[in-house]
Image (cartoon, one colour):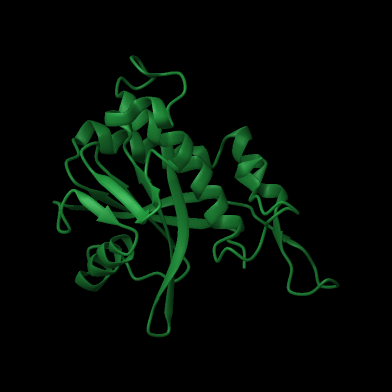
Length: 202
């Protein structure tokens, strides 16, 4: 399974300003027209080894967005992320779209542990996965704001950044990373090299 086009739904978790959400909105709305994203267009879906190849084309489109004022507190676990997203889908704040990709973006005071031995800003800056509710399967990603541990997920811009918000700007690179991987390897069983790396890991 590979996404040829992508409609993204964003769940802002925690404390976000309008200026910060505007940075994310602009980024998602424009990255699909960049030369960098053209690399993604070389990936394709193929039913069988002899069937026609259908390449990723884009565009990337931002769908509905919503905010969550710490419904699970500021310390999240990996199992919290799908629940938060699905709660907003059930409430109608996010569209129910099995062909869409949902991103949960946490604010700088949020912490997240995917498991007992893997945590945000220590082992990763973001990730993507999938979860199922009954017969429905959803693709999602998590990216946190690393402002409190800026050296972990931002190599260069520790004091200044292009949009004047070091933490949110530091989220954009892992966001791009997880976006293209969620498109080319949404169920973690598609585009991997011989070492198990996805396309954005290279």
